[in-house]
Image (cartoon, rainbow, N blue to C red; front, side, top):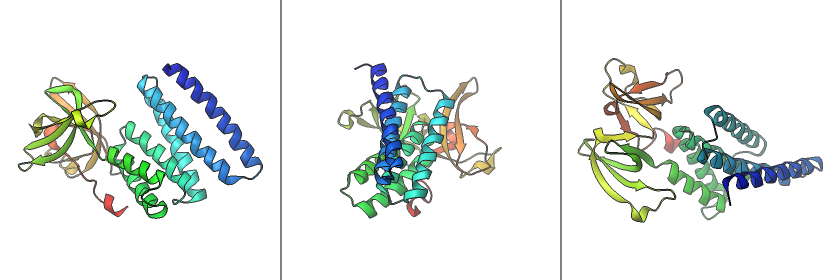
Length: 258
């Protein structure tokens, strides 16, 4: 089936879901209406993923999609509470899209919270808990690019020798097949993080040392490679940082308290 045909089918399906939701709301069948909301969120998630693969989603389009999913999630959160299966399902769709748009710190914090709630309320064997745990495993993966192999992605596993070396696994394929991946140990200066990072060793911008941020892009110029970092702390502007002044944040500060 072609991608265009798939998107056409999904568009038609979403229209039918919206009609069904309107009917359920009209006859005051809130549970069924909420289920249609969850179905629509999942369908929109799949549509966005298909568009990303076909390079049809602009940055502005992605921001609009994120705002819509956030609004839908917050609406269900306010109406049904955090423990609702529908709230969790929509929250996972929102988090998945945050991650794909490189808001990876926010995505991991949200999925961690949703996974904890789902496991406590619905049990570890519930489908929604299994989905949350699988997504959590994915968003906690620390993806990197290597100077010696810039066309391929690897997963960083740990630092060794006080941060001098970084152990990675890969290269990562789509769909991923871990059985075919190998472990390598590279000098950390050869590893370009595409994941949450912490600044260190900065002199002219020492106020950024210790700050956590998301890697959004790379800038390769005559002065060398710089990593575009968007910081989590409010009020801090994004900055271009040398790779040697960044270390991978394998665990997010405070995430265990969520």
